[in-house]
Length: 167
Image 1 (tube, one colour):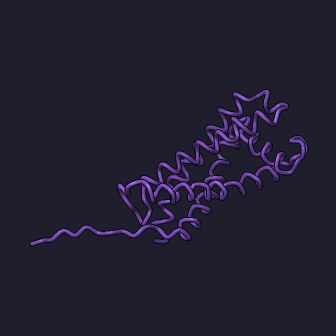
Image 2: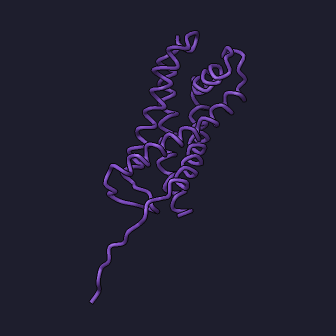
Image 3: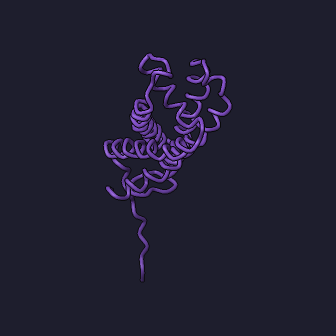
């Protein structure tokens, strides 16, 4: 007689989830370089963000400064993701758990953070910024959407892969 046992997988510890999310956020920012390089307005969000953070004009922001700023924001978005994921893990029933990671909380968090990152730049930062970038707003928004989608897909894949590797 074979007895089936339901296995209980403990949740991923918060510290580990934070580290994984920060690394995945950086990987997402690095992956965003692909569409950003290929799109005419791909680096406009990074340049605008760097200019706002440094209090300078976009024309004075070097591409390197924009890229460094962009890559620094990736782990911050990863931390935003993990805040959502940990909160949702406490609320949502874990439909499935892989390596201690609640997949329902993970997927909802990826969607929320990706939407937030897109909306924050396209609806708050870019319109307030003004200048030439604002004149090209529809194109900048479309290209930012492609970049943000790349971030979301990378985050969606990287977090479970990293969790499986370390947990």
